[in-house]
Image (tube, rainbow, N blue to C red; front, side, top):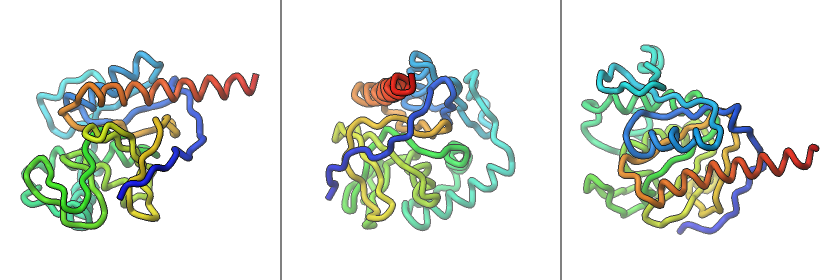
Length: 219
């Protein structure tokens, strides 16, 4: 059961000093960058690996070292948490998720949280006690599980933000989070809905608000 828990982090960042690490897929990935510009986001990196159709101006081609590391951690995350089959044919896409998390200190994702017994978008029922995130986004989030990084997920179906508790291995509903690290993972589903777009904008608004409050205290 998901319990309500207030966002507990108090770290405040200036968006003019932040970098969002993301993929280049349509939907959530691109909107994190587009929306962030309006609020002063300094930089966004859209990672790719040998993808000719990825021509975003913020594209970053990942190194062979990061790709090879990515393959290993994709397989580890799959073995421990996701239990999905035939992932090899998607490895180029899945492994490029690794630098998105590797070079970040916190994770913000738009998607659907699957609890034990829930059926994902591909028709597979989730069988483990630990919740996961549906789709390819689930791999980046699972990397966060392995690395014990702060994870925030907006569930478009439930219409709430949730934070992963590494101690209880569960998600807790939270109020709108703000960005707490200068390097953050900004990812999510391709099927971005209006409430998901609003959730992204709310995070940026909350981050600016927190920063402005802190600035007033100091001056």
